[in-house]
Length: 74
Image (cartoon, rainbow, N blue to C red; front, side, top):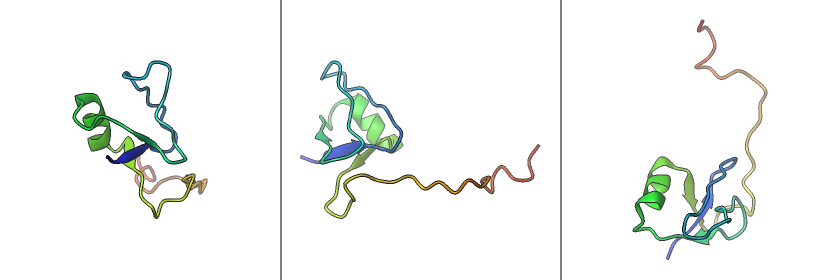
């Protein structure tokens, strides 16, 4: 069974485990991949599969610059 983490900054509740959220770091958690709720989160990229190559805690890149898509728009 594949283990998943929440993408950085996402707070994803687990309806089958009241009061718990999908962790952003560590080993992640296993989810029911047949459940439409989790399938949608996986398809949208909100749940990321944990791989052996992943660092223990993903670090979001902060550049402080405006994105190219926002420059020149009014």
